[in-house]
Length: 266
Image (cartoon, rainbow, N blue to C red; front, top):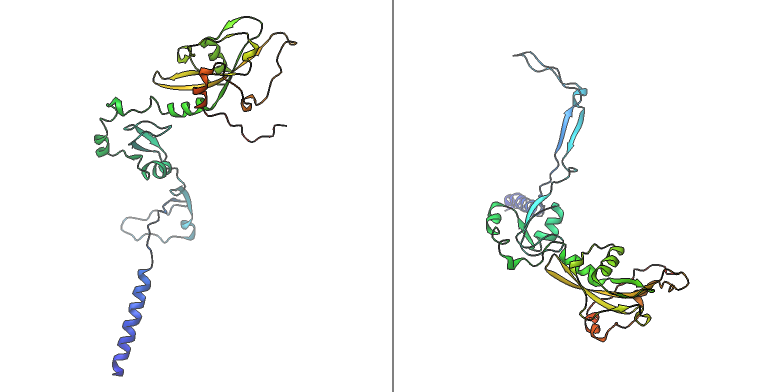
């Protein structure tokens, strides 16, 4: 009986080692360094044994560290419209980390392998699948719908609001909008009329002859005579006001108001 005890204890100890080894996780790590000898060893004669290496022969210069090497952008194919990138079926080049976390994992894109290129080659040919005219169309719509455009008109001379007036106001605010992309309301706006000061209306901007967005505007008067000028009101978009015509109220209520960033106004 006692002769079998060593064999039993040996089997138990070996099984515990196996259990402990099974809990280890072996994971591949890419740690490749490209080195170059600082002092190359001397050549040896043909047929003779190589010369013994000295300590100086084990001094290396680092040529390349693959861990810090910048990874090249990869090609992916979008499976749906992605804001700022493109429409479904478009092949784009993005950074690997962004592609993996923001496009491939959520299922918004696939790798641009030959099989996927063949699968999505007819997607762009179908015009109905194109949601927006360009990758920046949706961000432009969101931006224009949130602004409050100040349209400054002359206080001394009569005028009728035209698209080029609004175009000038867009340019002063940093937006380039052509005349033919601006659509004014059907009811004309004329002045000068101090009853319309700081009141709202809207214009419709057409983007790439496809998307349309309504933009909130406020009318202000300006005079060349310093005495007749109306004092400037900072953060005028935060003040409540009325539309120029009651017909504009329904559209203006659908537009989000501009939000002022948290800054010191004093």
